[in-house]
Length: 138
Length: 468
Image (cartoon, rainbow over all chains, first blue to last red; front, side, top):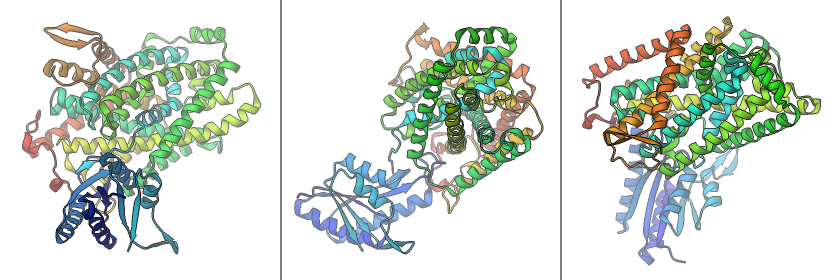
């Protein structure tokens, strides 16, 4: 399987670090391209293009960290901040638009009401992805 | 930073909004137009076609948030953009009040005081606005799936009701007699046409959604045309069925706030009544709740958009540091909507007054939309127009759309008549506009901005300016 185009959505967790490293390892073999995106969710009471300064600063700092990690591995990662109503559909939309070969997501171990939980974004991506998905659980 | 567009179903959203107005528009119009209710809705429908076509051209050419306020800013200047936006805000606020005001009567099926007691009904309406205000300040997620499902279920129920009504109730002789015997005075017919504008609230919502739609140049005009057809057919059907089911007097009194429930209650088959009465109570309650919320969301977005263009003070764009919502505008406009509901405790014609107040705001905004499209044709003939209105007249080498010219003349006439004949909407509506212009003047002077335009370097609040 070739990994020419890899999409790595990040949220600022420790799992992202390992996910981006894994993406670099996979992409290096084929000299593939990596996109890392952070999705800023915009509440419905605001227009979709509303610029919420602190949110964008946070997103940019997380993505800057991803770029630094890539540089350490002597590779290049393209980053982008997306604004959307929902994270899941935004990731899928991005995957379709960029025609990526794979989505690679870092997943943190979470418990909700005492049970292991993947949250809502990961199941949405797994259900709707047009390409294979790799989950890296930290 | 890029936007990811999430809601493809512009039509569903628009219909969800317009579809909700069916649950009260009929009653408001009947209050003044009596037997001529279907005629008033029909004439308003023609004006609605003109307005929707104007919005289609404007939205396709300028796919951004703000609707008529955005058209006016591009077509004229900042001051016109502000006046159109402020008028639009009034119509949004009144939509919130009216939608909330008509929920309790429908829920009266489950507990009669909701319908029969003015105090309980009005208190419940206020509680609904307060509840939605709280939800929106916190920013509870509302999925588009719920909205789309409700719109589809709504459309299906309304079509079913029209079909059942035509099969079981429709009698042309009875309808014609009821229309002729209860024909109103010319003045009332014109007011009825103005109030009927409330039936067509979704145009602005669809325009607002242009920025969230992929290929808005194509999709929004198409969705607007689909909505025109759907709404006109449903409204024609429902209004004829309602006059088959009830006399205009019954429609304007017992069922003025819940006319669709009136149709269900007057069906000749008890079994159908038993099924439809609770179904309509639940459905209308849900749809109107969504519509009330849509009004609150619409006005918050509009206020933010106006704030971004330096047309209203930045406080209205202030975002809550924790909830990430424009809490000041949500709270402020909810409180105004609750204040508009206050007369519901003691005034008999509060419903008609709210309808007329809505007309003052929305007709002014629609007039600005028409005028802006005409102005853009004159000032910027080279602007790409993916959807261009046909039927133009050529004046000094410029093509001017006849539908927009007719639309603006007719709306101006109706608007003036409303102001002359309706003291409540005259004073409250004009008071709102004057207050807005004073706020605008003070704000622009304080910011050292000219009244009519914003210098390029100060055009938008960049992220660093976004107040927290």
